[in-house]
Amino acid sequence: MKKWIIFIVVVIVLAVGGYFLFQRASAQRIQEALSSLQTVEAVRDELVAMIGGTGSVHTNQMGTILWETSGIVEKIDVAEGDPVEADQVLASLRKSSLPQNVILAQADLANAQKALDELYETQLALAQADSAIVKAEDAVKKAQDRVDNLGTPAGDSDIDVAKATVQLSKIQMDKAWDRYKDFESRPEDNPIRAALFNKYAQAKQLYDQAVSRLNNLRGTPSDLTARLAQADLDLALANLEDARQNYEELSAGPDARDIAALEARIAAAQATIDSAQLTAPFAGIITDVSNKPGDRVAPGSVAFRLDDFSRLLVDVPVSEVDIARIGEGQEVILTFDAISGKEYQGKVVDVDRVGTTNQGVVDFTVTVELLDADEQVKPGMTAAVNIIVERLQDVLVVPNRAVRVKDGQRVVYILRNGVPEPVTITLGASSETDSEIVEGELAAGDLIVLNPPENFEFGQEPAFVRQMRGIQ
Image 1 (cartoon, rainbow, N blue to C red):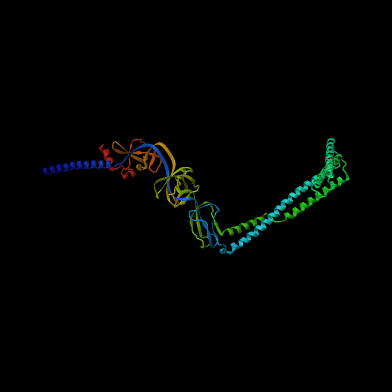
Image 2: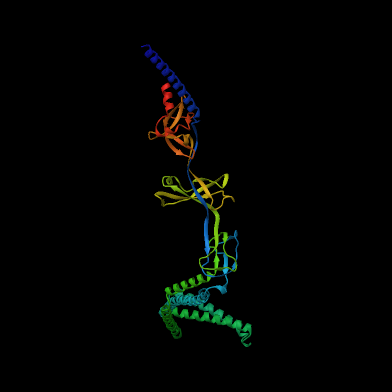
């Protein structure tokens, strides 16, 4: 019996000693776990929300210039690095080396241009003939009015004015005759005699017209005036008929389709001739020269590369989840692995309206322009792009690395009374490093645990936390 009592006492002593040793070891583990926790205070600060991506730098415009015909290069007018203007000649081929179709195109161009010129002359003549009809119709109307008005007496006031005009024109005619008759006997080639006779003739013509108008107004035109008026009408009618006939003859000529065909023929011939030389399609800088004088080239072979460095751009694929937050004009921060310690500024200049599906993922291309690019930034470099989509002032922020998931909800762990406690939170805007807290029992100054044990992510507290709660 004593033996059993002794055995029981020994077991109890060992159990009590083991318990105290376990508690001591547990306390030591708790202290070690607590000492390994990294914490940071929750603060109210500015939050810059960004959407990131990567892309390659490219120039505003790039073109590979190809030869369009075969031949031997006669001249290269530019070198690598040279700036060029649009339509500037870059290189040309030796005429003697050109294919037959290029040589014959010169003759075809001349023939087509001549034929087109003749068609345009016909068109001009047709327009002139149409104008002649209008003038002839106007002349007929005026002549008919004169014939119709010959026998119609006018009012007394009109007749009085006409009489006065006759008298004044007679005085002017007599004066002109008096000056002329003193030189009438001189030779006909005498300049003074000729000038005076011309003035007399003009004065007589005005007098005759005044007399004729007066007779017409009186309704007593002379037989000569009546015959002249009828003759003018007959002549005007004949001229109108001739103008109409001429227009009909010209209008039967080539139409606009003939002109269009010749213009197309000229354009084709000119394009063939132009293939013997290369020109810049836009302004830029020559970044590669593939030929030298004397090289034989074939259609489609590369001659130059031309880049427009007026702007440097980066195309960035953005997920369909984020694209709604991006718009033209937003600020952008760019960094390059090849350029350490330097940030560049940019802005969004274009957002694709249609997405592209790649392996089931829909992306939209966002184009960013560098605003302060320098000589270190070169086309082809990979850029890390951060598009600023929102700037928030004085908001409660926590580090992204502190956010965990517990029971399907986002939480952060806060040290309260020395014990990490989960706090359910709702996040707002986020940057690469921080997130906005829009809901949650959290305030500025709370100590946030940055490195809770891994099983926090699966919704379970670690054993040492449970132990601490049990001790407390």
